[in-house]
Length: 244
Length: 187
Image 1 (cartoon, one colour):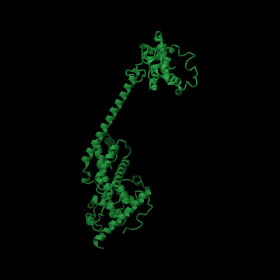
Image 2 (cartoon, helix red, strand yellow):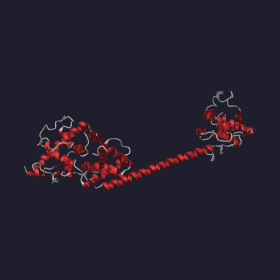
Image 3 (tube, one colour):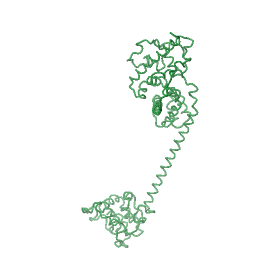
Image 4 (tube, helix red, strand yellow):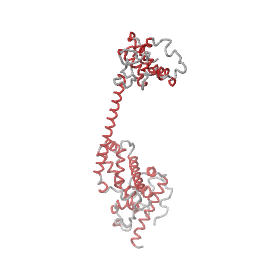
């Protein structure tokens, strides 16, 4: 039988601990405590060198490894291609939005239109288009885009202020920016005018988007008669002040 | 154990080099098979394959030294075995293999007392007759070459419990080996 007290319950965890040495395969059967020589032999055998049949599956394991790695590589390539495609499509879509060849971002249907309500001829399409796009479905995207068009010189000069002024205008007129912007003849006034949008305190009830009359916000209802063809060259400035 | 070249081997395997993976596989597969065959008799090969699939899938994400890698692989293996046991309708019985250990030497027979006379399979089978928690602790210590803290982490036990279990297992093994020749000798 096994001698009691060979492995006390509270043994120090040191390399000299017989149990630890047994379990670590560092104890020769000759050096084992009485009754434990066979245990040492068995434990050594259990940790012995690999048998041939234990390594027989190596070709299959390597084949599996190759297959899994190949699949992972293909998947990574597909993800890269999909990402690149998404980025390309996104870039094209944004570029389309900038030039509006499809009219996706322009509710008036025109590419940067001198459409109804814009009051600007096609030559001033940059600012006028931007003005009409304000009431569209993607104002934030619109605001982020630089004005494009023949009148982009002056209109572009005002472009750094565009996002904030546009947003203010949208908030003030409840999406009526199209008709306002469409009447871009108002833009003839210098943006620094004391009657500018920042100088005017918004009238309560009209300033909140929720209270704006939707009918006024529709570009189609803007009065084209307000546009002065003679001032077409200034439409660019209207673009700069179109945030009103 | 692979030794100082382990980092390079691991990096090569993570990059998809067959040779590097082969080194890892040859180092760990025998211990993995012995451990899994004791935990789930007859299913060691399948479980080892599942384990290696997981290992290959996670090679790129693994970072650590060789001991950590061994502990990680055996943790995966244990999870596979536990999952299989849960799926099984009933766990197949592991018959006591003492009578089957024909090549186990009698301690009083010096001619057969050589270590080589005990086959690895017989030794693992004998350890597998221990209570499951004791057998698992002994196999993780002896076959996988893990330390107490690593075994405790894998099995979810306190290190003190692991020590107690391993000491009980050693006592039990000594009793089994001491009792076997007496039974055979008719004493």
